[in-house]
Length: 137
Image (tube, rainbow, N blue to C red; front, side, top):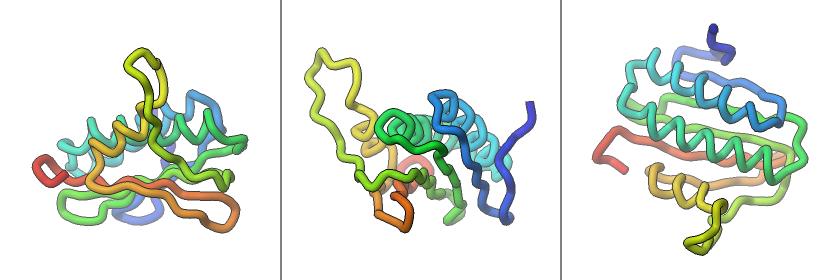
């Protein structure tokens, strides 16, 4: 299967996905391929987890028809992942009990990312996470 993310520059890939649970799988694959192409193999695992959580949140907790995903190389060993949707509700980490099966996604993002956050934009919000190579989290 070929990569569906459109190249918009030498260090950035972006794509829009229908807001279905499969979008997380597609975005995960596309982000991993971009990182492999850039030689940033050390960031693949963390990036896959982060984009999966952010896209899944956008699909599950908003009524958006599509979800936007981009990855930008920001340095020698760093990237920024951005997920956009049409909701104005900003995400907040949950406080799940040990028995809860859900609610840990943003806690995982917080552990894996050097920094993350969200901002309201015209037409919705963007949630971003910055990743750096091992030892720089």
